Image 1 (cartoon, rainbow, N blue to C red):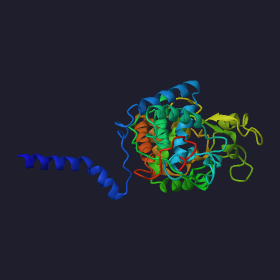
Image 2 (image 1 turned 60 degrees about the vertical axis):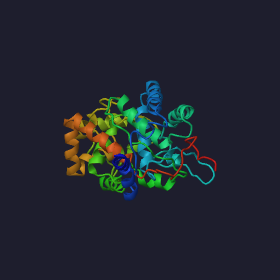
Image 3 (image 1 turned 90 degrees about the vertical axis):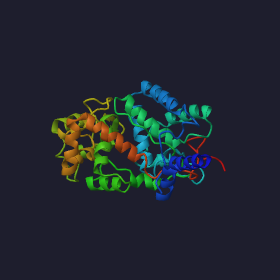
Image 4 (image 1 turned 120 degrees about the horizontal axis):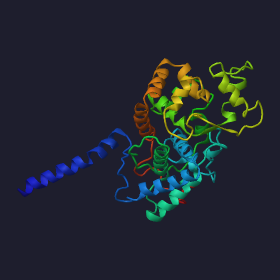
Length: 333
């Protein structure tokens, strides 16, 4: 009887750790929502609390924190490399074209990290904090929630060239954007769903000016942009100057996470070229835009799935990387 009980215990133990072993064999990341259940059970509440205060103070911060996670994951994977300041051999990604004068929310991540460190020193990674902050920001803006797989570790380096080359740009062609997504293991469904994050937030005049005045190098505006909407944009985005002037990505409900972004695209009122090409350059993406414009629930469901998928891009796990004490710099050796 004792032997049988022992054998049963061994089998149950093996089953319990089977997913971990399978992950290691297949080289997949072993991220799971309960990663800090024993080591830092308060982390979810701490992140939620600090993000809520930041968004209450400035509504725009929800979009900024969501974007920060995106800009991190597309460069070297979700490893908090975007948070590093320049120092020693590290050249910060904050100075790249996609991030310079536009990436923001670093102080909020600092505040979260400081609060988490007081409760659980050197336990929770900056990469995981960003993933949680992105989810909480989405929920606070009225969007969907999802269980965030955790267990990422932080990089000990950054990639300025990766930030310049890997992050989709507002003036990229549809095919270029799709290729950048595919290189990260994301498909056209992920592309359209994640583009829906532009239902909140702002963009600068410099990011879409060419659509208003010289889309194809012929000194003419983009023919796919609604003429009345274009004239409204030109009032605050002149041919020269006003580069940093801000415009809502979704002028209908700019602070509410909903599906108006997709409805705007169908009305030729997408702000960025990278938004409007989802309707004009691909039948497959147009079909998805139509579906999400008609069905908020379907959009929310896919957005949550795609965010989990994006958050799983090449994370550092196990003994790779480190748990930074300060998100802006690597730990001293």
